Amino acid sequence: MSYFRAVDPFPLESPEQTRLAAFYAGLADGRLTTTRCTGCDRTAWPPRLFCPECGADGVEWVDLPREGTVHGFTVQETGLPAGFPAPRVFAIVTVGGHRIFTVLLDADPARVAVGQPVRFVPLAIDPDSKGNPRWLPAFTPSA
Amino acid sequence: MRKVALVGAGVSKFGVRKASYRDLIWEAGKACFDAVPGVKPRDVEGLVVGSVMPERTAFQSHISSLAAEALGIRPGALSARTEHMCASGTVGIRYAYAFIAAGLADLVMVLGVEKLNQPSGDEAILNMGTGVDREWEAAFGLTAPPCFALAAQRHMAEYGTTEEQLALVGVKNHTHASKNPNAHFGKGATLDQVLCSRMISTPLRLFMCSPITDGAAAVVLASEDRARDLTDRPVWIRGTGQALDGFQLTSLHEDYAHWPALRRAAGAAYRMAGVTAADVDVAEVHDCFAIAELIAYEELGFCAKGEAGPFVAAGRSDYGGDVVVNPRGGLIGCGHPLGATGVAQAAEIFVQLRNEAGARQVPDAALGLTHNNSGMGEHVVMLYGREAA
Image 1 (cartoon, each protein chain N blue to C red):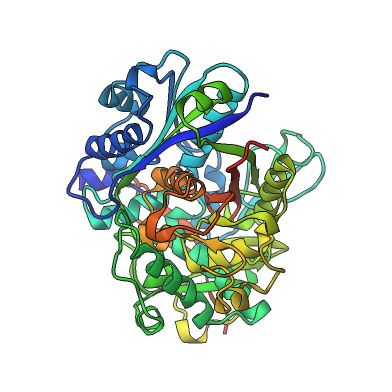
Image 2 (cartoon, one colour; image 1 turned 60 degrees about the vertical axis):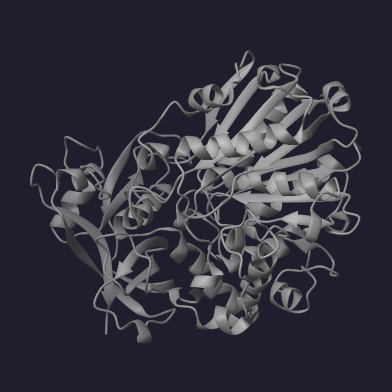
């Protein structure tokens, strides 16, 4: 197992490891958040430390809507990386004017469609090397 | 700027090779030196090595120095590695070109090498996740196939492109590869075989995808004076362009069937060369997946936007058509040893423009193009001419 720790593909989410830790803390609370520039009010996705539009370094955390729609998708049936089960529905979803890359959970691959409504669900993944829980922003069909 | 030409090229056998990272460097380097008898390793002033993930596959960094020592090169002007995912090889050629054009060197080798099938097949696929964003993409299990599948879905919905048209890219490139003894695959493929191959990521099937391949390729670039001393048939670099739209999928054009960065990179190269798409006789384009070759036809200007499906179906990208695309078999037929691919594309254009391509020869090829991408959002284009201007 120590070997696979060395090729851990998941984000480092704790406050000791990333300045985006507030985002991951939000996921643990069931909230989908991102950063908004306090200089020009633009909201970014994904969250970031400074605004690439106006250059201001002040950002604040804001909630994104929990509902979105499928912008595009594909079902990967084979050739997934080790540890990721098939089939897997990869999707771009539109949420609050942002495009978010994600996976659709509990979705029938044959019934996924562009424009389909989806809702945010935090996805628990392997804990980090110190045993801290980790989360990703996933979505699932609303209906 | 000074004129720069290719004066030699060589490739290793591509495939799932019983050969080490260093063996592959030896094979391609030796083949390249054999192609340009006037150049001894000690004459080479610079070496640029394109290689993406030797740290993961070969437990090896410090690549350019390793390769220089293996080949007997003692760089005095330039030694560097380029890592730019799948475009690493062509990015290396651009550096060598700029160095020579600026007068900082006269003779530089660019070598691309990758040993992907190591230590295991599962890990080879996991490693591909390093080419997308770990935090926002790879963590979900994303590698290249779903990215290009999103583009294929969009192209089919928007322009009516069919599975059969996607499959015809696979048929063409597997057929071309059957005439290339260095290709990963040598048996060709029928339309039925492509359409019945297993699904990777909807709608892309196995034979519409490039495989995971070990391989290496090398070219030697020279200043005008050195080039004319070394060969009576230099292959001149006529134009080059590179452009980035974005890294993450969600930073790209919201319509994944549109690749504006490729259009910009191609435009820069065409302007620099003073040519248009209609002048290109032979093109090596980045068919990592069949949809990529179709979209490349459009963004490179070989056909109008949305018409790539009918273009391939009518044979206009094959021998006897408007432009021969991927005569060596492309990434689908030759394989895709990431860092080696861009250099192998240049090596093919080198033999094509010198009329040395044998069974693959494109009749009277005078202007050649290479297109190498690193994801859908970043593209590099080179133009090569039989004539210097």
